[in-house]
Length: 344
Image 1 (cartoon, rainbow, N blue to C red):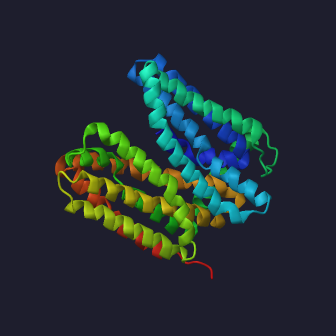
Image 2: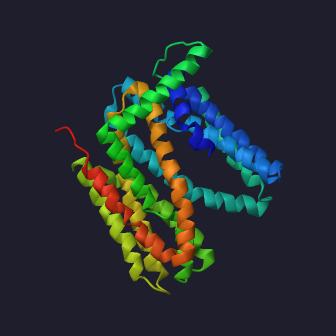
Image 3: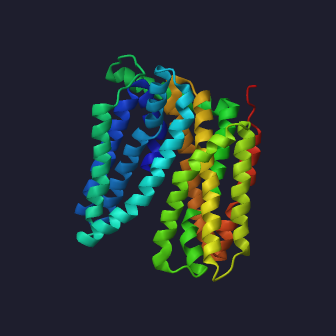
């Protein structure tokens, strides 16, 4: 809720004041909030800390990407947009492989609550590194506090208006939202266990899934040769058919189910660098963080309702059918992508 409520205002603040220091502040808020969680047992105190963490992430959301793109623009290296998004997704995959192993080692040596200190400490470390070693090349006008507040409201309105009025960007964002809805991540675990995967092997599945995320982004370079809407529609269609194929899998063939899920996710991550590169070519510098935050808020609002609905549907029809039929959101995604008119 904290993330959704403050997404656009904090993005606008980053555009008006500083994208670097917005991200630094956000990482600090998240780090401190998470670091404090083990010291409380009351539900409402913990809920408040998670709300603060969401607020912190709203300062980071949009500002981090905008900061990198600004610096690339400053050095006239727009050609590196795609490479940046490929490598950032791949590094996220490396983190997803290493973190379960590191977490297991920490829990084996000390109490499980110490993971919160590691989690919070990581955000505080990111804040420190960003503050000390990252330059900001986008120069903002020096404003007084009252002017910053006023400019933030104007910027919020301008960013939301730009997103809604720029049809290629709006269709791209809606397509990306429907693509994310294809993947019912909450259903992966019960689906595979229902196909007779031993519970103790779930960690291996998620590590393999992270390995896919590490490798597949580099494949997006081959799809750059196609028109954007063709590339996004093709990879989305492949993911959709792989998910629908889950309907044909039965126990004890969990290995087939696991492979289908991993490959479907692999084609999704191919989309990421293509999507983000094109989006940043459409967004003007002065609105970059605001528009990215508006995109994130739009997706988060729909995702919150969608997730609650999915839980009910999985109880009603079972995870296998819901995960498989979730792929049908790919049809809506492809319709949105196909509306994108590209300059020749």
